[in-house]
Amino acid sequence: MGSQKPDVQGSPSTKAVNSKPYGKVILTLKNCLLPEEKLSPTPSQIDGLDRETETDLRILGCELIQTAGILLRLPQVAMATGQVLFQRFYYSKSFVRHGMETTAMGCVCLASKIEEAPKRIRDVINVFHHIKQVKSQKTITPMLIDQNYSNLKTQVIKAERRVLKELGFCVHVKHPHKLIVMYLQVLEHEKNQTFMQLAWNYMNDSLRTDVFLRYQPETVASACIYLTARKLKIVLPKSPAWFSIFGVSERDIKDVCLRILRLYERPKPNAEELEKRVEILRKQYEDSRQKARQSLPTNTNNNQNSVTGSDPNTPHGSQSPSPDTRSQSHSRSRPSSPVKAVKDPKHHRSSWSTNTARNHHTEKHRSSRSRSRSASRSPKRNKRSKKSRKSRTPSRSRTRSRSRTRSRSQSRDKRSKKNHRKARRSSYSRSPSPSPRGKREKRYKSRSRSPVIRKSRSRSYERTEKKRLRV
Image (cartoon, rainbow, N blue to C red):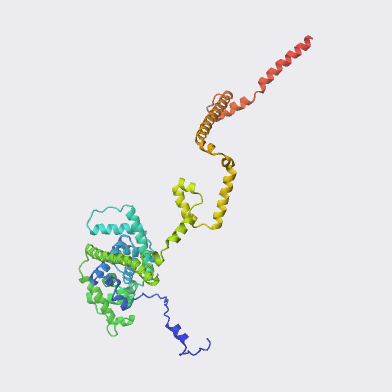
């Protein structure tokens, strides 16, 4: 919009700004392809796993996802997404550090959510348990809901989160399913069902390889059509080449075809042997990790001691306190009342530790309060003589016995009063009624004593009238 300013070449500020590396955020609908630097030395190979074992584990994991998707009745697009996510994840993490089976479960759950066909984690775990039993030729039994099941469920949830984190939430996958159909329509072979089905099968098998991490889906679709045409001996246009219309080179097509064909030459992977190899490497990795953890604190302590130049036995290189300072600290932290400390040693220890943390002002305040309380509560004890102090024990026993007798007599009086009240209530109470309605009626009748009183009053009135008449 405005005029651009010329760059100052010699200024150090521009060099400092240009030297800082900034990450880029690219939003595209194309698949994320990995560079050759990440593809050749994988994290599993760095941890000591050979290439053949790693490829077998990749094939086994993709087969598990495919069979689990069929049993869960997922669409083929969801199964393909899960396999691509699985392949991408293990180019950033190792098979030695992260279990293959739990990661496959997490990829199935994540792919089902991405392709809008979500499945429960419980169903995914049950399906994988069923596949494991069928492969090992064991009796098929349902998975028990116990602590192992809950632990596995949490591991699957964590694996799903880990996959999302490692992929940077870039989980969009463009699949070549529709591209195969569209390309065959352009080549006028859409009515040939065998051609389309075989190309589709090649494309599903290519998901077990790392083809989708090396090339775009247009190249994979063209390679599947190329393989199918060679297999069925169908001639495709050569001048110009049919794949040049789709923007694909012949070199890439041949590389994809070779990777797919190598898959058919490999023997079927044995899951038990692969697990044993990975377990050995995992134990070695854990042992080395524990050794590294144990060596860390000793190194840090040595470094701190060398920096401070103090005795290594003292913590954090601090100087050991002299005996004079220790005695002073003990004398300061002693409690003010020695009688309490002798009576309760636990309280004595706790007060010993807490008094050091108190301020001088609070100690003075508390001591003055305790003195005032003692003076106000027991003024007569100080005036007593030695003889009265010596004769404390028998007087105490007498007072205790007197207080016991008084309490007993008081309790007896209370009981007698209660019994008397109960007796009075029982004299006034009448026979219990069977129902609440009857109770109300009886109460009402008992309250209305007016007719009886009226009768007595009328008789006395009649007597007085008779006397008056006689007179």
